[in-house]
Amino acid sequence: MKKNNIDDVEFLQFIYKNAEMGTIGINDVITAASNEKFEKLLNNQKEEYQNICKEAEDILKKYGRNTEENGMMAKMSSKMMSELSLMKDDSDQTIAKMMMEGTNKGVIAVTEKINAYNNNDAEIVVLAGKLKATLEKNIDELKKYL
Image (cartoon, rainbow, N blue to C red; front, side, top):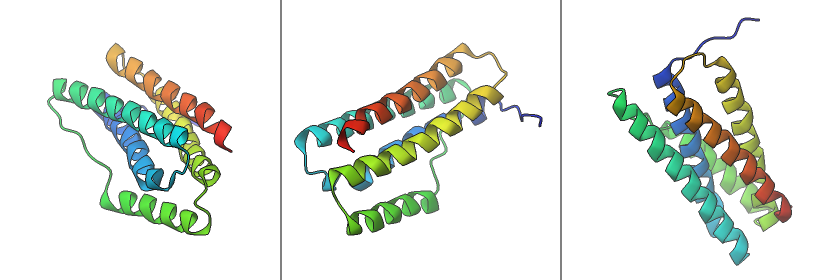
């Protein structure tokens, strides 16, 4: 099966939206965290996602483009899924599991995009690698809360 190539702007928008969803997901659950260390971890992860969003935004500006945020439906869906899960069980373990599941989907998606990207903007390649590494690190950090 032939892979679809993606262009620079499309890839940057994807990076931005993926990191933005990480921020949104954390915002949806952080108030339920009961362990202070766990809450601090989530805040640190949120800051990493925000930094990636900023970097993607800065590179997009070089292309003369603005960021495209995730749609309202994606944001509402994330919030509703989090709220439903937390209604059943709002433990730190449940939060960690939810965050890991979403983050793992991000790892898969960014890996597919990296593999489909054949352009040579080194700045984008580095940022995509940073996003993937951040996602993988975040999963590892969340494991201790399962």
